[in-house]
Amino acid sequence: MNLHEVLAKVPDPLRIEFLKFIETGEASDEFCTYLDGNREAQEAVDAIFERQAQVLEDLASSLRTHDPVQVARDALAMPAPARTVTAVVNDLTRALMHAVVMPEPDRRAVVERTVAAIEEAAPEGTEVELRKTVAEIAEAVG
Image (cartoon, rainbow, N blue to C red; front, side, top):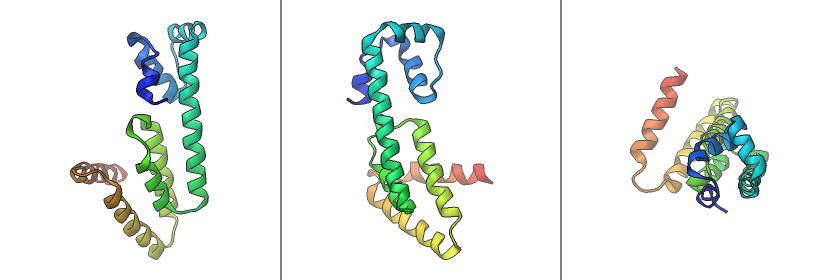
């Protein structure tokens, strides 16, 4: 079940609450009441949590290889609707933290291989967004 199918089970006024809940675990009293009394909503939450658990298992498997390039490839392979901001942040953070603790020659190799993997996997026409995103990260880090 993809995110669009899951969201179809949640009434429009509660979709933002639903997305907040699956990303942060936080929910309003109104949403909790709705969730407690609606089997379809419970199934939707279960489907999302099962998907998130699978993503984490896949990521853990990739991290065991200690290959940040593979982690980046796995992140790029995820279908966009299934990705949350938190998931993307976690993937990028893990990959970068592996890279920064490597000796300089290895780090340079990781950067080169990552660039090659991104060029191979990135959809056509996303080069500007990619450069902009990397620049924003670099600027924010200082």
